[in-house]
Length: 524
Image 1: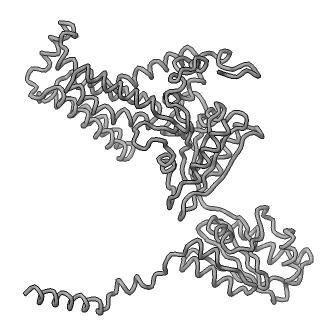
Image 2: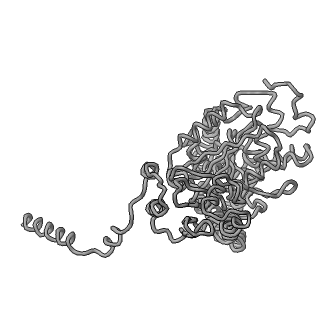
Image 3: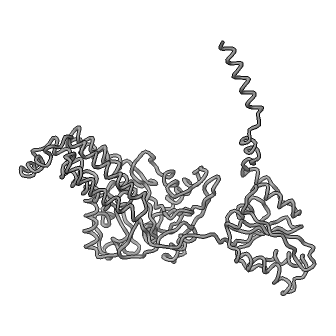
C-alpha cells in the first residue's frame, strides 16, 4: 500500500511539472539580477546602437528610462542619443543646459558640422553645466545615470558624456519636531545629503573641516559622509571609524540606525553608544568638541561618535541661556533620569518589604489607599506601566491631533476608572504618571528607550529582593556601563576614568570664561 501511494505521488508530481503554470511562465520572463562584476566586464564600442543595447540590457525594461535621439550638426549625419531617468531629473534643466546648446546654440557660434560639435563637447566648451565629464567605462556611467545624470552617446565615440542635471524633489528645511528648541536655530537636517552638508558648512567656515564620502550598500549604494575638524578630532578615531564603515557589508542603508547598529562596539547593550541628532547646531557643537559626525543619504539623523553617556544628557540649549539656569535644568534632568528609572521599583520595595522606612502618617495613607485592591504592588505597577506604554505607542502611531487626544484622554479615563473600580490604588497612578513625565525629560530619545526597557526588570528585582535587589541591579548597570566603550572611549568618561579637568561641563555648566581653555594649553 505504501509503495502504491509513493508511485501515485511521483506520478502527480511529474504531472504537475509538465502542466503549464501561468505564474511560472510569467516569472521566467523576468530577467535575472545583474552583478557588479558582469557590469564591469562590459565594454563600450564606437557603435551607438551597440552602446544603447548594452545599457538597456543592464537596466532592463524600466519605464522611466527615456532615450532622446537627434543629430549633431546641420548635415544630420552624426547620430547621437541622450539617455536619462525622467524620475531623477528636471526636464527644464535638461532642455536649457543640454538640448538647447546641442541643437540651437551650436550653429549660432559657428559649429555647423557634427564633428565640430563633438570636438567642442570634448573640449567642454559647449554645454553650460559645470559638472560634466567623459567616461570610458560603462560601470561609472551607469552609476552616474542612476544618480540623476544624463548620458550623451555619440556615433563613433566610445566614451560617454555624463551631465549632472539632478532635479528630484527633496523636503524643505523645517524645524525639528523631535528636538524642539526655545532659543536657538530652528533649522533641521533633511533627507538630502548635500543639503545637510551645506547646513554644517554654513556654521563652520574653516579649511580644516573635512568631508569624506563613501558609498555603502551592495544594492542601494547609499552615500555616507564623515565630517571632522583637523586639529580637534583624534586622527585615530577618524581612521577607526573609516575602517569600520568600509567593513560594513549590507545590501542597503535605509536609515542612519542601520549604521548605528553596525558600528556599535557592544550589540547586546541596551545603551546607545552613538549620539544622534536632527539639529545642525548640535552636530556642529560635537565637531567643535573634537567628535566625528556621520551623515547618511535619505536620513535626517546625524550620528555623533563617540557617544559617551553624559553627552546624551546634554542639550544645545544649555549653552544658549544663562549658565545658572542651565546648571539648574541640568540637575533637574539628572534627577528626572534617576526618577524615571527607579521610582516604581522603589515604591514596590518599600511598600512590600520596608514599611518601617515610611513615616507613620504616610504609611497609614498608603494602607487606606490600598484597601480593597486585590493585587500586590508588583502587579499594580506592571499593569499601569504596560498600559502607559501602550497609550504612548498609540499616541505615536496615530495621526498627530488624534494621537495627542488618545494619549491624554486615555490616560485620564483609564487611570480614573481603574481607581474607582478598585483595581489599582490612587498612589500607584501618581507614581506611574510621575515616572512617565520624568522619562520625557530625558533629552536623547534612544536613552529614554533604554530607561523604559530597564524599568521592568528593576521592578521584578524589587519585588523579589526589596531595596537590596534594587541596589544590586543598579550596581550591575553601573558595572556594565563602565565596561562599555564607544570607539575606544570609555562610556562613562570623564567620570570613569576620572578626568577632573573635563568635569567642568558634566554636572554643571560653567560660564563661557571658565569653559574655554587658554590658547596652547592641553587638558590632561
